[in-house]
Image (cartoon, rainbow, N blue to C red):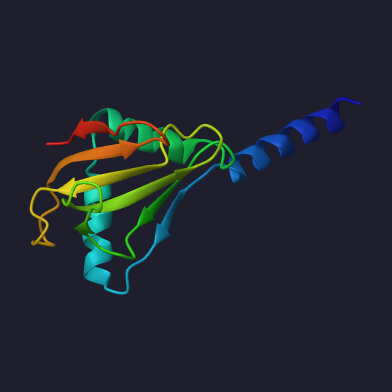
Amino acid sequence: MKLPLVILFASALVLSQAAQAEKNWNANHNPAINNWISGMYADVAGPLGALLQECQSAAAADCQVTIQAKDGVRPSRTDALDHFTVLFSGSHAQYKACHIYPQHPSNNKDKALIGANCYQAGHAPTYYKLN
């Protein structure tokens, strides 16, 4: 009688691991831009970096991250600064989106970051200093 229960728990563990979120990628047609944005994303540190990692390791229904590389680094409609966008989804996502600002947006070899504005619906953005 104990064997079926063990199999049930093992199956549940495998399913819960499979349901964990991964970062999603909305790719750019230019591989150099994808590499640049991927490198900048990987360099996000501090509280925002921890939040991104926490979201990536959460169950998919709770939090998912989508890196919007398709549009490259471009000016923001809200503040006119060049950025790339990270979108969040899921029931436990702290933000809807973050604009992550490169220090030198005209140099796609430089992965240094200035900061990020993260947005919740109906709230002022939260700024994270990243340099």
